[in-house]
Every structure is written in structure tokens, then in C-alpha cells.
Length: 580
Image 1 (tube, rainbow, N blue to C red):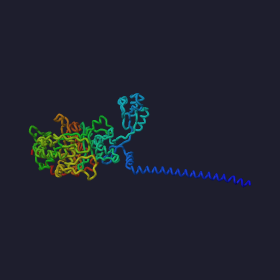
Image 2 (cartoon, helix red, strand yellow):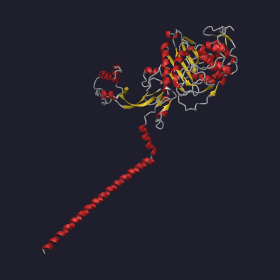
Image 3 (spheres, rainbow, N blue to C red):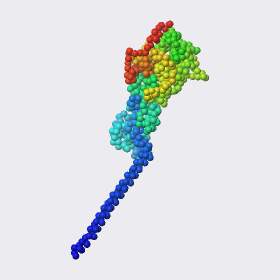
Image 4 (spheres, rainbow, N blue to C red):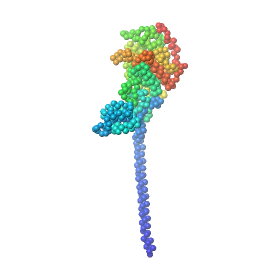
């Protein structure tokens, strides 16, 4: 009785316990199911988002990632990949007078005290300038491109108005080298003056700024050219200089210089004064360097067929009420090789008179002398083209003076392209600062016959061997060229007798011309280094004579004394009695 009662009493409890356990287990299972459902929903939402971004908006996502990885502005490199302009992350020193709120002094200490502390961090700065700048209360940069440790020292001064923002700067690793070609980037982030301006859209376009813009320049050649031009300025006390190394077959510019240079990393007042490009933007009367062009035109037209023919040269050539003189007496008569070797205005003018103004004018136009020079740079000078009659035809005296480089003003770049045509077989091509792929050089236009070009190569070589260009004769490099010394023109008209432009236009090696090299000095003085002489034979020609041996091996041209252009048929014409 008692046992049955106990059993009956315990059984319902156990059943209740079993029910509780079942309910707890069911609840746990339901929670797991809901948790799995929740994770499934989250996973589905994430997958949907990935599909939305990756499939429906692929371009936008890719573009934003590209923008985040690429520099703010693309690089510029030379033909060998040497960096010329790069985007460079750096700190700057910024003055924010409102950092402590409106009203009251923006500085904890006085401007003079803060300026003195800043100069201790930046010894190249000026206390007076910084004091005035801080006292003005105007926001702006106090210094660009400061080091992280310098930024930390500025912060340690405890001046909230002195901020060090982290920005992307434009860095020119080569300093002032090729500055007139590169230009610079202004505060607004856009390029100015040089190829920075030309390539501005390309360098800032995310789709292309990951690939550097490659120039035709070779910085090794550029450095040699600038170095020798600087030496020329020092030796002659010239106010400036300019030069080029130009590929005669493609028009690629290996080096282009205008001195004084400027520092594109820091455009200050002094730098702004030197931004003007003498080689592409300034026009000059380039004097006797035009004589080979005139002789080539006459040979091409069949006017000069016998180089041994002698022309009277013993007295000034009268043309109406004008007289044409040589720099000094050269003999009673000269033939064509002698006229070029000794640089006779009188003989060249007679040849031009026989050629006629129409043909000489046409040759100059074919060489691009009547238009701005062809190159990518934005700064290109417009020639001073001689006035003609109502039909544009030159007068007799105009044609004669133009023949020896007077009465017409062009840039040195015009001359470089003309000399390339003189020696490369007679084809004129535009100059370019972009590296060209092999076989992609422009066809150009024929100006001279190939036979005329071959004859000019001989004559230009003779000028260096026997004439005014002797100091350009770099041993083993077979240099040929022509000197030119012209008085600078005055704004009011006429010529400045005390100011010369001295130019030597050359090419090498003359048995197979590869490069034109031009050196020009602006207002050189007669010094001990030039034996007191101011003319191109004494100052510009030696520059070319030093540049060529420096750049030849870099360009794959080694000196070879066993080779030269054959001038044996012309040599007997030189040195005969000038009275014949």
C-alpha cells in the first residue's frame, strides 16, 4: 500500500522533469535555427552588396581604387627612364592666423620671437622676412617641403597657428637641369611654361598618369651641354647662352638649354626672371650661319655649278645707296669654298643676287623660317620676316642681306632644323621633345637635293678644318659647321655695335651626320679666355668643340682618326692666290 503510493507520487515528477528538459532542448534548437537564419540573411545581404558593387558598378569601384593608388600627377622621365619630375609626398609649413579663433593675436609669442625660433629650425630663412610675414596676419605658406623631424620641432614651439599639412608636392630631382623644357607646376596644381603645361591634362588624368611621360631628352647629354654653355658664359662674361643637340634624321631633341636656368622646385623672383627661353622664344639675326643655306639654295637651283669660279671681293659691294662690307679684307677675289671658309658677306650677296629673291624666299619658307618654330613647347618666338612688295617679293638689297643672316630674325631652333636638312640628305623635319619609336619619324619635306646636301657636308667640314670653325674641330669626330657673329638690333632700329650674338651651328660626324649641335652666346665680351675677341670663332665654336667629345661616346659615336669625309676635290680650291 505504501509502496504503491510512493510510486504513484514520484512518477508525475519525473514526467514533469522530462517535459522541462524537452522544452529546454527545443528552445535551444530554435535559437540555433534563428541564429543560422540571421547569419544567412547577413551573408545574403553581403553577397548582394558585393554583386551590386562588382557587377552593376565595376567602373566606379575600379576608378576609385586607381585614384587611391596613383600619384596626384604623373611622372616625366627622359628617354632612358631617368626621372625628371615626380609627385612627392611632403610636409609644408602653413600659417593659419585663425587657428585660435577670431579676435586677438594669432600667436602665443610675438612675431619676432616666433620668427627667431623658426630660423633656428630653418637656418636658410630670414628673421626679418618671417617677422613681417607673421605680423601681417595673412594666411599662407611659410615654407614648402619640410622634413618630418622639422615638422615635429615646429609643433614643439606650441604655436597652434603654425600648421604642418601633409601634401603631395612636385619634385624635380635634377634641380635646374632642363628647367626650360620641363617648366613647373603652379600653386593651382597645373603645369606652366614647359612640358608640364603641354602634358598637363595627360599627367592629371587617372587613366594615364600611372604611365610616365617620356621625353626625347638624354639627361647625360643635357648635363654636358649645360655645363659647357655655363663655362662659355664664365669665360666671356656673356649675359646668357643657349644650345641644342638635335637628331638630324628624326628631329628628336636630345638636349635643349637656355641659360641662366631657374629652379622649378622653387620659383622665386630670381627664377621668374630666367623663365624666358632664349632658344625657342627669342628671335635673333643669326648672321653668317645663314651663308651655307644660301649657297645650298644656289647649288640646288643650278645657279652655282662651278665651285672654283671666283667672285670679286676686294672692295665693298654697292647696291643702290647701300654698301655691303666684309669684316676685313679677304682678298681681291674668292671662290665658294673660300667665301665660306673666310665668311665673306660680299661673295654670298653676289650669289644671292644671281639666285634671286623669289628662290631664296621660297627656300627660307620651306625651312620654316616664316613661322613659329615647330616644337611642343608653348613658348615659341615669331620670326621677324623681311617686308616685301605688294606681292610679298623681296627687294634686291633685302635678298642680298638675308643671304648672310641680316634683316631676318629667327629663333636658334629654326637654325637647328635648317642645318639638319642641310646635312641629312635635304629633308626638313619638325623638332620634337617626345621620344619616338624606331621607324616613326615624320616624313618631313624635301628642301634640298641629296647631292646638294652631300656637297654642303663637304663645305661645312672644310670650314672647321681650314676656316673660322677650327676651334670646334674635336679630334676624331669629323665636325662640320659655320660661325655667325651678328650685332643685336635696337628697338628703335639699327644695330648695337657693342652687343653681339655669337653662334656656331654644327653637325657630326660629317661622313655620316647624326646630330646637329648649336651653341649661342648672348653678348659675349672679349676676355683673356678668348684672346680679347668677341666673335663666334673664339667663343661659340670652342663650346661645340668641347661638347662633342663629351656626348659622342654617350650616343654611340666613338672618335676615329682614320675616317673623315672626302674633301679631296675641294681642297685644291682653297689657298690659291686671292688675286686670280
